[in-house]
Image (cartoon, rainbow, N blue to C red; front, side):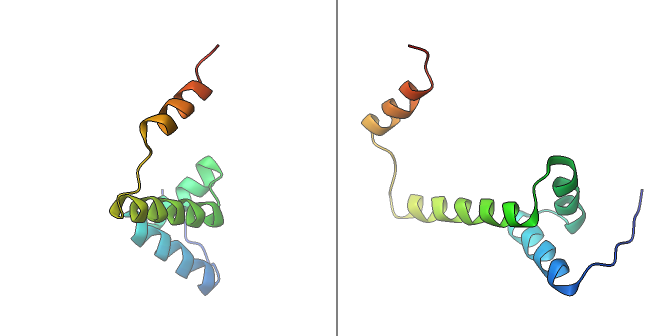
Length: 78
């Protein structure tokens, strides 16, 4: 199915930027927003967090054993 949308240039640019950063097509970005409620703002924040995590990993910043145990314990029933 094909739908043609007229959207402002600023939105088109945001969709295209998200698509490029996430290796998706613009159609997939819009489909995700419609199917899962992931607004463009949400997708941009998600990609920024992914980038920050990659930067931390590149710097060697990883959780230590105590930090991992705390997170695992947080979700384990007591």
